[in-house]
Image (cartoon, rainbow over all chains, first blue to last red; front, side, top):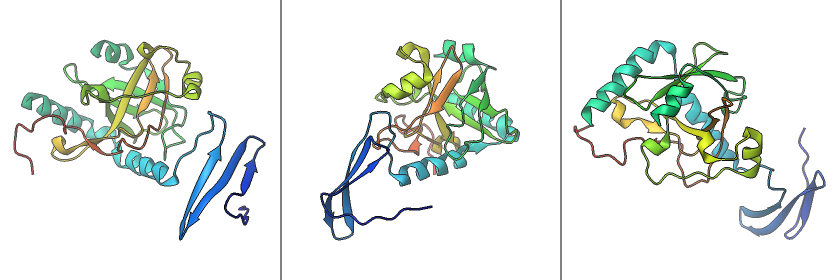
Length: 80
Length: 142
């Protein structure tokens, strides 16, 4: 379910009694948003989370690769 | 450093579903790749086909720094930096010297309590940083 609200510059939305989301400026297709929230509320740009997810997925190794990993990391030490 | 890795060698680390994209995975067995190397392998105990190669960013990046938020410290039961092992997940490339490390979202592990989580640092760190960027290439690569 998604709630859609209309807000103007300077207007605020309150979440859960302790989080305020303020539209601080609007310029063309860019909106600046101010957030007042307790320190333990995590706030991220969604792209950052998606980047990390993609990077984690790409980093996956299977146990079959383990022997190969040993050889590759060893080869690298010898080069130093 | 190796002392900490030896302490955790073959131990099970509970990452509590904190790996983004792998929220179903909790337990990982940490094992050293070999005795001379700082690399470790994290084998998922929940899904046998999933594992990760990882290394402490401090081994490769002298200026790497990390600040834990109060809520992360509380959640992980950490009150002293000595209690912590930091690991960056590696995306392996062929040749290995082109591999990258995730400095944006390292794993922070409580050494004694053997639990940890993937935390997100400030955005000036990259999810794919050249692992060997700060070391001269001794062989010509690509």
